[in-house]
Image (cartoon, rainbow, N blue to C red; front, side, top):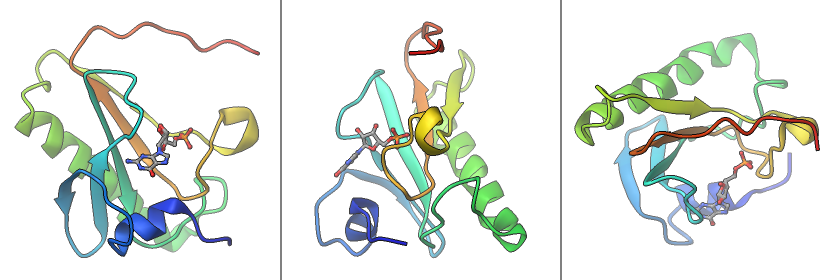
Length: 116
Ligand code: 5GP
């Protein structure tokens, strides 16, 4: 798969506001936030999308949800709630071909899923 901007962020070749990092996972603030809290949580392994992930990737993909849970707790948005969003492919609106989980919160968020 082609190199994405997220791989450059993982390698610290371009800056990002990193909020969590371990051997498998990186979490950083979205450059164009659509909510008061908007964090992207990604596996360091360049998995393109949910549609193309291998069965063996299930552990690391599961781990991105645990990291989202922990960040939400740290940011004190856990009790009020938040959204977790993964876009998949063209119809899903995925722009960066490196699997990422959006953590969105800090306000009551509207529903805006409709065909374009
Ligand atoms: P997608 O539409 O693929 O689900 O979401 C991609 C997200 O990545 C968008 O919300 C976009 O703002 C974010 N993004 C794209 N390029 C960069 C970047 O260079 N740095 C950061 N922090 N976020 C980015």
